[in-house]
Picture (cartoon, rainbow, N blue to C red):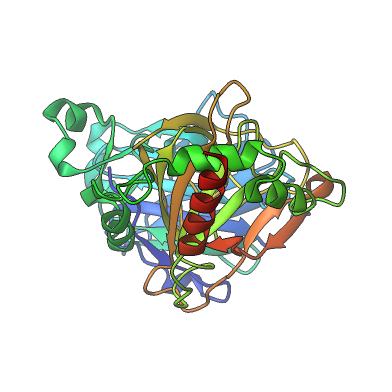
Length: 392
C-alpha cells in the first residue's frame, strides 16, 4: 500500500520499447489519440507471443486470450467522450486479477474487474510487454510498477503513531510509504513545534479570525480583492489566502511552503497540482476535500469519487499520479476558519516543470493559475500581531 512508483512514457514511444517494470504486474496508463475513434486496443504478451488482448470501446472493456473472452458482467463503461479523460489497465499476477479504469489509476475508478483462476498465475507472471500499432488509438502516458489492489488511505501517520491494527486494516498510509520527495516535505512540517499558535504569538489563529471578520482587517480586504481571481463575475466565497514561507527554489510550482487560509463557507475551484508531490497538514479548523478522477472542462459532468474531512493535525498527501484533482471547502456549517500548510515539490526526474495549477473557471472552462503569494509569512505574522494589539 505505497504511493505508486512510475515510469513516464512518451507519445512517440514505440510499442517494442514498453516493458513492464516487473514481469507479470503493473499498470499501463494511456490516452486516446482521437476522440472520434470508437476503440483503443493493445496486447499484453510474453516472449512466446502469448498473452491478453485488451480493448476499450464505447460502453465496454473487453479482454480475451486465445481461448476465451474474460467478461465482467457489470462492466458498462469504456471510452468516454469527455475532455481530459484518460485510462488505465492493471495486471496483477499474485492475486490473478485484472482491473481497468478511467482517470486516476486507483481502486475507486475501476470500471472492469476479472478474477482469473489461481492456475493462471504461472502464465500471467511470464507477461513482459505491451504492444500496440499506429492505428490502435493509443497514446501512452505512464507505466506503474505495482498493480491496483486496494484503496490507498488519504490520512498519513508517522511510524511512532501506527498500531498493528492500523497496518492490518490499512486505515492509514504510513509516512514511510510516501515517495522519498513527499517524505522530505512531511518531515519539514509534521514536527510537534510546527504549529500556528506558538509561544511567540499564542493568539495567531484568533488574530486571523478577527482580521477575516473585521471590515478594516487586512484579510477581509484582501479576500474582497480576490473575488474575481477565478472568474469574471465576482465570487467572494471562491477565495482563499496564500501566505508563503521562504522562496521559490525552482523545485516546485510556486513557493514550496504555503499557509492557506479558508474562511467559513469559502472554497477553491476544482484544480490540479502540476504533477507535483504535496503534503497538507491542517493547523486549525477543518477542511473538506473532494477528489476527482480527471480535470474535465465540461461543467458538472464528472463527479467526485471520494470526499473526506480533515481536522487539526491531520496530514494528507498528493502524488504525481494520485489525489491530483481536488476541491477544498471550509463547510458553511463550520464555525472557524481553516488554516492549512501546503507543501509542493516536483519529482527529482521531472525535467519539464509545469508551473501552473489548471482549474475550472467560468462555465467549467479549463484555465491556468500561477501559484502566487498574498504575503510573506514573516510579514503576515507581524501584521496580524499589529492588528490584534490595536483591538485588544
